[in-house]
Length: 194
Image (cartoon, rainbow, N blue to C red; front, side, top):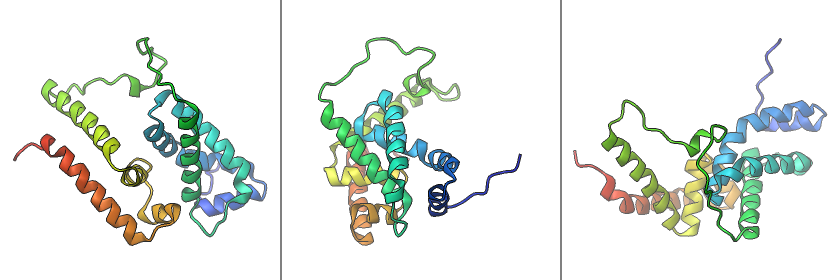
């Protein structure tokens, strides 16, 4: 079986719109994990992140003819993902807390085991640091929090973020610099002296 030709996003979209609908799978594979991660960071609902990502890709597929190739595909995709995640938050005001223990069918994210090569102390410090980072990101002003999520969780480039947020590139870099400094101030207690 011949290997599929690797195309950039714009070329893939063009092929799909020309009738090669199977190429949409390539776009999904390229962005699925990043979309799931991004949506999870907004909704804090791990169980729903996969379902919401599927809904997002359906929306993208149905609206593909409205994509403007002057812009990055990823910018357009993550704008749709952001809007979908915000819609979920608006509709759900009840906080869901699972009462059952994780089963074998649940994702590994739900069941975290320490690395056998890591000491219990280091595992505890890593877990505490992860929780502190999540809390610190949540405590950021909303515009800084969103930029951190787009850059570090959705892995968008500075240029993609600038295009998506309709901000000058320098403004995006400056705000991310400030956001990282705020995070650093909050997390200084977790930095071990040399």
